[in-house]
Image 1 (cartoon, rainbow, N blue to C red):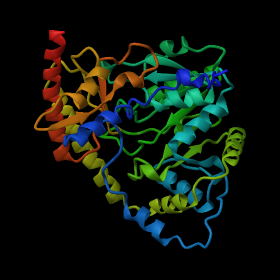
Image 2 (cartoon, rainbow, N blue to C red; image 1 turned 45 degrees about the horizontal axis):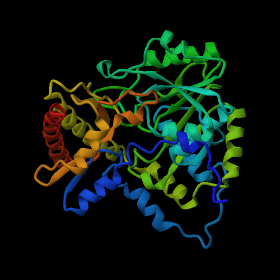
Image 3 (cartoon, one colour; image 1 turned 180 degrees about the vertical axis):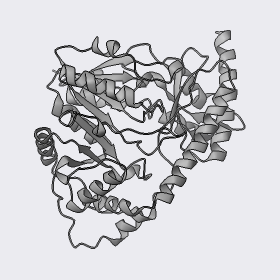
Length: 405
């Protein structure tokens, strides 16, 4: 008998990352000597602050032992100070669990509020890995569509409540938003809080891009919402704000003691987060406000380069993003997946091309986002300007190809 054992049904539902799935094509292009500008992934090129890098060098222990499952006290204390500095007051170390990146924070949060088969409402397009975490946690995401022509802001309360069933346990948001760059207004968050209170739901808030807001916009943490302390779970990470994606330091925060007790037990099951990374991340409290302000100003200028280039084409639909470092653009093409692959396999402009993320992977509903791409403006301004010129030429060339076929 030559049959082999079946693998998990998750194989059917676990999608490939739209951000990373085209990497083999990009590598093949580079092997041919082609310059590939990476606008597909949110990997900042800003240098990691020396406070974090130097801290790694100063670690002086004879044995790197397990950390406490909840997190190193020094790092937890530094998080309390950081959040106090950004206006999130009255947090205690017991309100937090240190996680291995924001990814584990999201996974732990999903598993803490949902039984297998339960539902979480999410607004699409959304961070693509929510799909993966939901498959891992055996949770069903219930998508509600938002639209490019109004900047991907939240729909009316009625549209949201229509999706609530006996299986609904939470609403999940990302603010500022990846992949759209939308920054939610106070009235939108108040609406969600009202829905959560009326329907006895949790509000899961991914706030990784807190610092990245432009044009006088304000980030409002879900932790600040009134009469929501038992319902809000905030997920966070040092990856973006300190340009330290590889450190893999995140956290879950909630004032719901019962929920945090469960998340601590999840943390105990995987033993601990890395010691050295916690010690280094604790030093981020000493990074100067000037560094942060200069970084945000740099990203605003990059945002302007991207948006102004997109705006030149009247057939591209795109609202100016107000936060994070992403934008979703609706292109005058039929299939962005094919377009993204074609950029890497066939298109060259002065022996250069660009890599983008097809937006269909940021939706749960079938057939949405087919003509959209996500761009991450995380490369330096000179390269970004060149990349946007190349993308403009590529769109023109691809439209001609589509008309022929």
